[in-house]
Image (cartoon, rainbow, N blue to C red):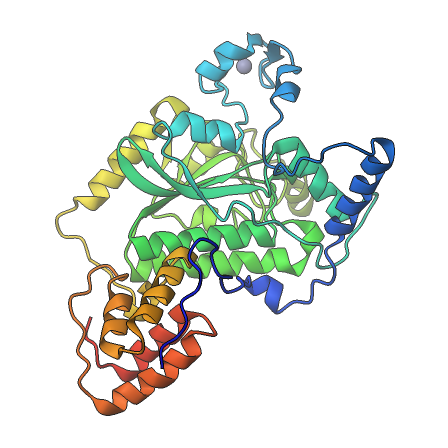
Length: 419
Ligand SMILES: [Zn+2]
């Protein structure tokens, strides 16, 4: 039976993306929507004919930045520095060589090749799963931070190019609620790692965090296990490279998970890196701690990190390390299961859906169009009649549910097609 073609100019509805942590937890009503409506109503009352702009939150307010003034003071030595000089100097103090806190936007601008940044999952934002509130509700705090920083959460993930080498990159931002790791940070990083594994990219994560986000309780803590599991696949099964770059401060749950799991661990000079705070340890042990305790230098001396490198040479060092890794002569080559490689983007899925509809139930053509989306595929072998019945069923289902899922299940269960 021929299936009707959907009208081309307007895209048919894509299958609804359900994030794992949205689907199995009942998040209830998102309070931010109510808040948004409240604000909108207020505006409407004041200026009835105001044309409402639907600009996204993560557009930065350039005016606010300009109002900050021209001069700043180094937080380490107190020298007064002209902000423009500081920015050209990669935010390193001219007086004492102290590495001043950088935002994720600045890192992207300073470390990547020009215009090579492609963000992933940039609109993902957290709810308030526990209904947490102290002086303010967690939702309000989120909105405030989002407006202040222009970010959706405390990490930016994506792909970029450093010295001509494509990399998967995670940039944590301490300005967003202390760079704390909630469910969104965890999910974004996990997706980034999985993306890097599938695409065979080396992974670099710039860490800057105060630890797990207390407002999300246990949901923050479980991110540590989730990220670590994804990293295990990336490093030990796919045999790919992962380098965390520890910047000041990297503490708490981040240090306890992905910050310390790198194949090589880099750090910025004099960065604060630790798990619990200095005072907590000192009081628990009833001991005087050394002056340089929890600094990058102290950790290097005790064998916990591999290299302390200034911002001026970081880009080059990363590029050289990745090249060295890629060209290593007797390197083990890892692989992940075929089924795991089959992850289409929603656009690819839609293209596939259409090509299937055009091919009108011809299984061979259908398979071919599916396989054309998978890199490294050569041919499809489908001669078995029983197999065609399986395909039949999968075909019916695939039009309703996620095509990728059904196809990959089908391919892995019948084993008629060799990789
Ligand atoms: Zn200084």
